[in-house]
Amino acid sequence: MTTLIPVLGDQLSGTLASLRDQDRATSVILLVEVRAETQYVKHHKKKIALIFSAMRHFAAALEKSGWTVDYVRLTDPANTHSFTGEVTRAAARHAATAIRTVEGAEYRVRQMQDDWSKATGLPVDILHDDRFICSIPEFMTWAQGRKEHRMEFFYRDMRRKTGLLMDPNGKPTGGDWNYDKENRQTPPRGLNYPAPLRFEPDEITQDVLTLVSEEFADHFGDLEPFALPVTRAHAKQALKHFIDTALPDFGRYQDAMIAGQDYLYHSVLSLCLNTGLLEPLEVCEAAAGAYDAGLAPLPATEGFIRQIAGWREYMRGMYWWDMPEFATRNALNAHRPLPDFYWTGDTDMRCLAQSIDQTKREAYAHHIQRLMVLGNFAMLAGVEPGEISDWFLVVYFDAYEWVEMPNVIGMSQFADGGMIASKPYAGGGAYIDRMSDYCGRCRYDVKQKTGPDACPFNALYWDFLARHEDTLKTNMRLRTVYASWNRMTDDRRAEYRTSAATFLDTLEPAKPGYARD
Ligand code: FAD
Ligand code: DLZ
Ligand code: SF4
Image (cartoon, rainbow, N blue to C red; front, side):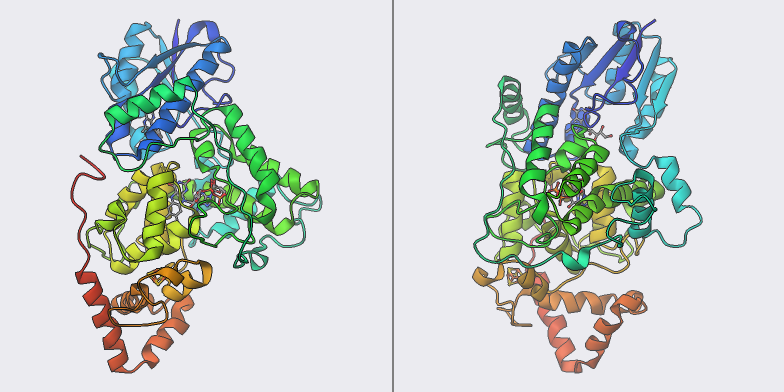
């Protein structure tokens, strides 16, 4: 009697449901490095190295604690390079009598798991992933029968469910659910930003870096320097470091963008959460503990907890609520190919060049760079949602479809027609100028509205609103914007539209082969 327990590359948690209450003597844990996963989009080199190194460290830790682990390396000549192929091979190799696994986080992978019983002829027990605060069935119950699925109401339920920042009388700590009005300030010059911890590669990581440099040389991004957390111990240190050094100022400067400052007060914990090295509840509890101990103010703590217990859980729920349709949503009928500069960084627009350069080096950009620079430009330019979604899935070390897709197709492109965001996150140059120091040394002038030297965001913003007036003008949150547009003279409106068209004509479409072979 042998139970085969496949553990996927984002399930690297000792608390995983499939490992719980399981007899080690009759179980074999399977981890596999497979090309189907490295290539379905051509992930950033750092992301592949992170996942392989974390998988290898996790396998070693499991073995040390008495599990039998079967680890299939990318270079194993018999590797079939797919999850189903490797599960089938391993089931035969170990004469398995049953398979026990945790549901894949991505629709694509979950579909594969449904084939495992047929492929192996064995019973397959697929367990819920209870590392998330909200299970998929619980989210479905919340979503069913609601006309609108706004994050804020879901988040309040998660606060009630977990007791995070809740008073014993059932009211939110401090009296309010959300303290954003006190957050999101422009940082003064000369602040000393805390840097995330760096973890120098050990022998396991060095081997992986060599492998990735040899096997994935044509993938986007810089492999080295590589200093990411790859073990549970690293992840716990990274969490403590964030709580000690950055949490107190997390919310206050959450939307700021500063050239040369890649991380500001962000936690950089998404990679640990999304691979399973940290669990969402433990991260939220650590933040709430810092508030209780008087080490972090309420607005920062609440803002941070909302990102995880609110946004992260909500995005996962909305992904499962709408898949598989989500992947093909294109409510604004956008069909422009992705501009080539997303891959090369070769653009005079400094905000985009800076954000892309950082993405290439670090496989990281923070939320406002992703939303209001990289996503905003694609939406204003009318880029096909599937193309920009592929780009986001490739380039970030925390990108898995379940969280990337609702953020890109929903929140940043409004391609879901407003399921996630109540209005498009569209902004002109003035917003970027207010929140960043990018514009000062840009070749474009953020104050000029039209013409060859004007910040392209300005004309693109109005052109976008004009293109979609029929669809968007009934949106109450855009009433004043459309009122301004309609107060302009015909000539002014025409200038905006011509300026935008002239700029859009200069965009080179990306060459094939960056995102997929
Ligand atoms: P912090 O700012 O420190 O926030 C703390 C944590 O909150 C994050 O680690 C993350 O787990 C969670 N979080 C915050 N915002 C969100 C959100 N909108 N959705 C889900 N979780 C959130 N996040 C991913 O994990 N993977 C992605 O592929 C991804 N793609 C994105 C694409 C776009 C266009 C946008 C606008 C956002 C995307 N996000 C994604 C959400 C967010 O930008 C990242 O989670 C965040 O930048 C990660 O950095 P951090 O850990 O320093 O976050
Ligand atoms: C992203 C990724 C990559 C690059 N490689 C692997 C791999 O070789 N083996 C593995 O188990 N998982 C990998 N992953 C993560 C998966 O693609 C996928 O995102 C998760 O299994 C989520 O369902
Ligand atoms: Fe970006 Fe416009 Fe500012 Fe240049 S001027 S950095 S293009 S917002």
